[in-house]
Amino acid sequence: MMRAVVVKTPGPVESLQLAEVPEPSPGPGELAIDVAYAGVGFVDTLFRSGAFGVPTPFTPGIEVTGHVREVGPDVVGFRPGQPVAALLNDFGRGMRAGGYAEVAVAHAAMATRLPDDADLARMAAVLVNGVTAWLALHDLARLGVHDNVLVLGASGGLGSIAGRIAAGHPARTVTGVFGRTPGRPSATGPWTHTVRSDDLGSIGSGEVDVVVDPVGGELSRRAYELLAPFGRLVVLGNASGHEHPVSTDSAWLGSRQVLGLSLGGVAHLVPDRVAAALSAVVGLTHRDVLREPAPAVLPLEQAADAHRALEQRRAPAKTVLAVR
Ligand SMILES: NC(=O)c1ccc[n+]([C@@H]2O[C@H](COP(=O)([O-])OP(=O)(O)OC[C@H]3O[C@@H](n4cnc5c(N)ncnc54)[C@H](OP(=O)(O)O)[C@@H]3O)[C@@H](O)[C@H]2O)c1
Image (cartoon, rainbow, N blue to C red; front, side, top):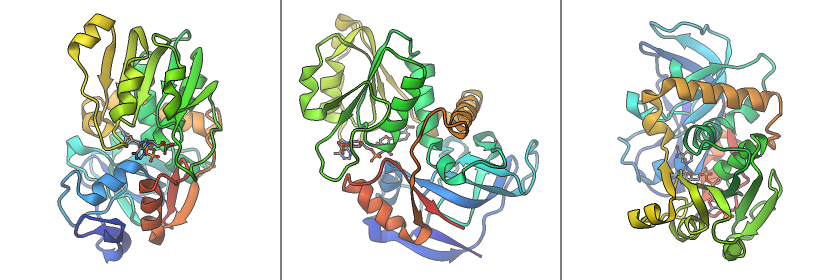
């Protein structure tokens, strides 16, 4: 048996309950991992509240670091005891999270070995958002050195690492868009400029080449209107709870592109791209090239506090749960 955070009935943060449950075993192509840290992201709050209709009971958590516990049949390149990082949002292969637990199972194609001296807390904080941002900027937006990048939701987990990856590429400018919610972290980071979401009008129409959009809704609509010809809106989420319907006429008349990515939905179809992005993000983090700030660390039993802070828009850019 192992300790895990379990959701029996989707709902408010109180539906996250610590429980003793059977340990999972790896099937063909899978690894069991002794989890050291599990990352917490906004998407976990959507799992918990029932937005995705995941069969219950389930354990949230789609990114972990730790050590290989057991290697399933047909797995090469891993052995017990190695430090590893893994993505668990492998929806195409039927996996459904499971990170807030002492043992998690990942597909080997979604895992990567870590250096022996890797900072496992810091690594757990960059996996989903880092890989998503990497694919969005490189594979979708095809970021160029002359591009002006606008990152919505810049105070959040996905927005902040997208800004760091864009700044490291490098792009010409990387502007972070921050909300007005009291208690959110200040606008520090990789930004050449910052702007309040209410003041987006201070950016001229046609001055933006790439918009990174984890927020959706009205902010997404206003950012889209700023795109230059051949500009790209990369839609990655809807933290606002709203989508932004786009007119196809506005796309062709303005010569603009709208691109989307769901890492968990597509990972099984593009394993080489995911593996390359995971390797790049882990390597850049380990060498501190991304200059990611250390995440907030909470014990596993405080998962509900982490979810509450995210929903109230007062969370640090990233929180990880210390599991062991
Ligand atoms: N496409 C993918 O594969 C993928 C991967 C990871 C995450 N996501 C999605 O990306 C989104 C962001 O995730 P995250 O973990 O970065 O979340 P987060 O840390 O909570 O950040 C969300 C950001 O959105 C801004 N925001 C604006 N309006 C908001 C509202 N009404 N409610 C909450 N936040 C609002 C917040 O900034 P202010 O408070 O400063 O306004 C905050 O910076 C989520 O929708 C998540 O599901 C998608």
